[in-house]
Length: 390
Ligand code: FES
Image (cartoon, rainbow, N blue to C red):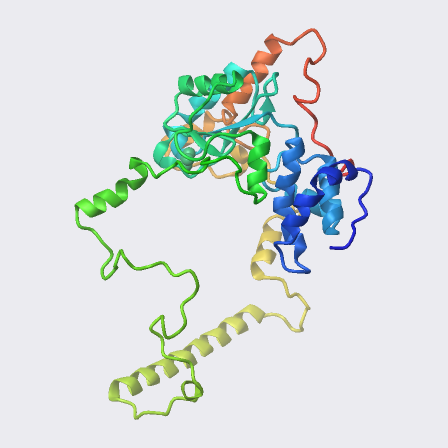
């Protein structure tokens, strides 16, 4: 690899991360190294716990791309953090099934206990809390992960609080399933594509009963896909045509197939298809004539008719106003009453569609505003860097 000239912003990280970064780049074909950006961003987080401005500069310099390109990727994915994180990232699923099963209560309980909201870190720098979208473990809803490992299944507010207290006090916490808990920075190293160095750390974590419930029921009731042999080996590569039961591709096979005498049914089908095609052509011509009726010359208007119709409905192209006044009233009386009593909020969302956890924090902060300076500068409420700063 050629020598990279690092900018002053990237130098501190380059001094620490150049060797593993080169190892990551070597996994990609020559000329395609910029595909290494995702693991490189994780690598950056192993040092600083987030994608710092220096981390953005480091990725940009080593890949020969600009900082805006790095920023565009780093801000797209939620696993790249834009402000410093704690030792443990506690994620509570508040998506549909977990929410129905009490996920929001679990999240609210942690918000109240830790005094932080989404993406914020506790004053001791130990716990960063976030609510997450579906964590792909709906069968154990509601679920809580620590550094992306399933740690509490079927969580309750109490079990979640117990979890964070154990983590804060350094007590060993056995995950419900999955690998042994490590720090978030150590997890970032694994996400960058390096093995967990701890002995047997990933040996646990078999599928649990709720996950296997469907399979067990199918076995119990003798349900199976017709003709499927459960012992069929999984092929690692696409099978050759012959292995896949397909005839070999030969010059012979590529030759045009000799015409065979048509049966009565085949020739009737062919005739019907030809007739349908010519009828469709005639209809298309009529539609064209109709569309162009009244036009004496070609106006050069090549707009899609739907765009033209939308423009005539809303010639100024401005944002529609209050939906309560611009939308037709629902015909159903119950629905009408619901709309009337549910005033839209300023952002267009129905009133009441707020983050319950955040409102708890806001309220709590208002009540308990500390009189002194932030005791933990650098850990909490760091303003995300702007693209210019990066
Ligand atoms: S909805 Fe929570 S894991 Fe799927």
